[in-house]
Image (cartoon, rainbow, N blue to C red; front, side, top):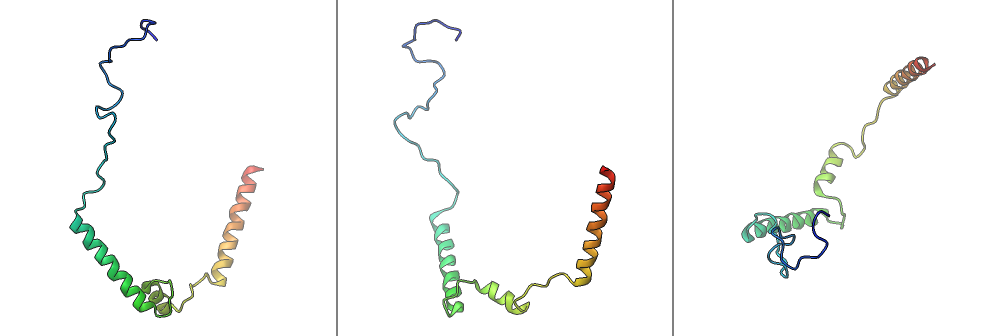
Length: 103
């Protein structure tokens, strides 16, 4: 843009590509040793073995979820009728106030 119109055959002072042009370099990801990875894999295998042993009938649910559902009766508690009515009244009042402010 601001130089001569003839292309230069000399290399530029600022290279646009890394020095290892033909070779792909690989970045190391994570700082975990082989022994550390093996410990994690062994722990995962042990977890899976426990989960499969506890499942019994081939259920895909984890043992912790099954234990939680047995404790709480298996059904989530909802809002009471009185609470639902109170929320409804509050929302209606809010909407009425908004309509009154617009008009």
